[in-house]
Image (tube, rainbow, N blue to C red; front, side, top):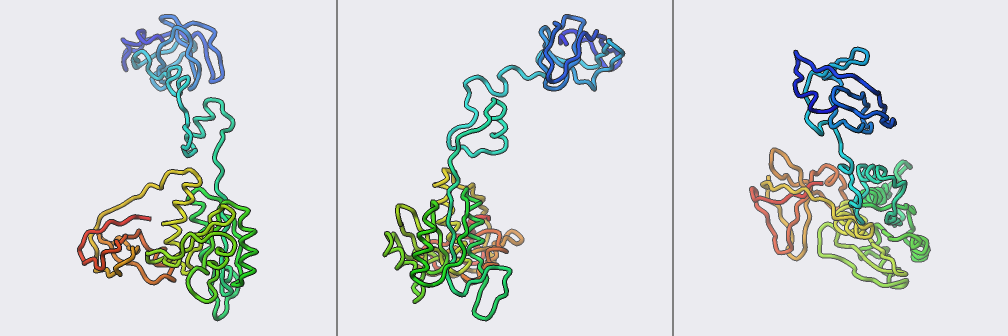
Length: 339
């Protein structure tokens, strides 16, 4: 419509216009809209020349080619101007941005059928230990189900990587060498187990013989027996075998590594400050991470032992205790990073 034609319109005193054309979404206007005239359009149609506003269909009543308008509109109402959504030469998606569904839609809107992206890092995941059994199989005395390869794969997916599970590796030097050679076909290698100082924990020996050992052990709890090496220019990360230690270091070490490799921004952290429900004791000289549940506005310690995966599965988040602190008193305010 021509907006000024509708100015006198009201609920009990409609303005009557003559319909000169009907346009569907894919139609091209053939007639100019003059004063006293209107064109019926579908959502998304091209605006005919002469028209400067659109009246919602629910504010009209049609009798053949006569249209009664019961509500005035101002110039530009219900119209998207050319370039209003995406202007010529404007940036649609910048390098390094994550392709969300909305950004994929924006690329499609400007006619781009594809876009160059950084590849998701491929991560080889191996579990060491003759005692480890895949979930779903019968288990006997002395054996445990493989928890870590599944939690590590989940963390990899969550942080932009593509997990490649290579299964369990025997606690034998040649088996580990052979498995590592195969694993190096991918971008990053992650072992679980075999990184402490036990007699059969031989990943350190394998790294020293095949490449470079960057560090063995970090001053944190849980997760002290962590190893990082480099073989053929690729990082090899050895995680502790205890499930809580492994998962904790996946968040603290593996996730940041992966996000950097995938060129993803750091994850958004949600932190709340609440009082402790009971005192927490820690050891001087290392950073400690304690899982907590939020109950009635208080942080209730949920930490069990390094082998207890439920301490993280049932927790709402964790608190970080600095290396120079050995005691947090009940009622003390702590910062909880939520999972």
